[in-house]
Length: 301
Image 1 (cartoon, rainbow, N blue to C red):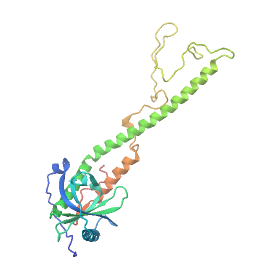
Image 2 (image 1 turned 180 degrees about the vertical axis):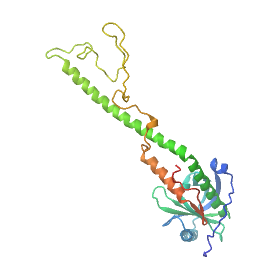
Image 3 (image 1 turned 90 degrees about the vertical axis):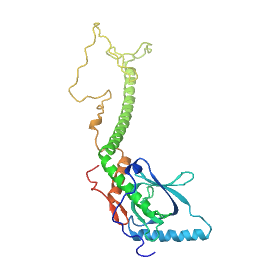
Image 4 (image 1 turned 180 degrees about the horizontal axis):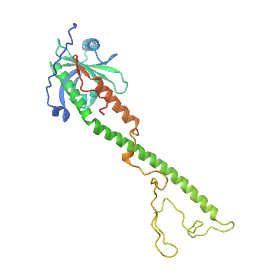
């Protein structure tokens, strides 16, 4: 391999309609030479060394009678899937915001490669493929998919992403309130039992009649509905006065209002994924020296 192996391609010319990558996927078949860890997310020299290493391993496998596996690549705005062409089982799923560099071999038009950050180990892995002289087309397709995914992320960032944050916040708030109400119900039950015991005169047996408190009223139970009882003079009970202070429920908690839910109430796992996508798209995808990036992400989502 000479120094001109991965040359620059400065004019980006898309080959597919946006609908083909947004609603469907573009499929290619290629031999999968494998992947190897690299120490940088970008760089011609980085991928050149990885290609050299995996090509050497390819020759060793061939000399031992091993065949290079064929794979199907499905490229869309949701990522690059590497599947077994027969069983359609997904071997690798590379999300676009994790792909930072993509290049094809200008001397050997069958070889192309891309660097992707692994979702579990966070290591940078370089994937190398041998296609039937369509390496440049595959490289440009990945670049176009990244460009469309980036735009979609920015356009939906203020809506879909924020909606997911609010849903996460609502779920967390509901869980907290349910746990708090459950604990308050237990405390209320204990207090009622203590009140009933205190009202039983010493030496008297417990009456089979419904126990009442000192005001001759049935103690409140969270399991029984609140039904207004008629007043002692036979007239209907007056309607309860509306409090002027903040309304609270039966257990002293303020009613939940989704419109006042704090912006920082969403679970940390959702936030970490959003931050990861933001950082990945912010880095951009370098295709043969051309960086595909739009406006900065700050303040957009």
